[in-house]
Image (tube, rainbow, N blue to C red; front, side, top):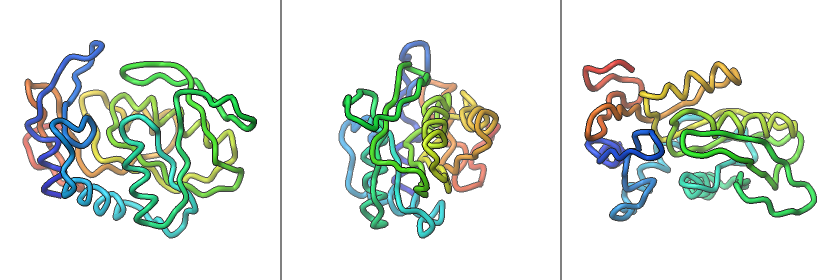
Length: 198
């Protein structure tokens, strides 16, 4: 967990479309993403849920897609990826979405009715991406066994919004505050580590 905490703690915060955005090596690859961090993320995320029950890992192609792919690879599971650009192929499944920074449609291939999946995300902000992914998967008739993410930005209450909109909870490794000039990890694996609300 040390490398994951380092990747999210005391990182620069920038204003992006009216939101406080954490620049960090895991998601933005700035300056780069050390292999030790990748190994730590895959190992720790794989512990958050029972991957034996599922046949597919589902991720979203933007920043967290490579994490979903690595989880699928490590755990010998098939991978399906939600994309923002339609392929125009037969079998496109689409849903409208809005997250903290953009809105539009998401498209999914490689999922069939009856699949058993785990959703993997990098960072929970407003929760909009995961809410849309859940709606899309439920519409297709997929069984969602869990949703895991590396971190949650507590300032935007994304996990609460996901739970309220879908009934699903997200298991995260970290909770991060973005209320200052730099980020602060306030919660790790269920334990408060700073004097902040979580």
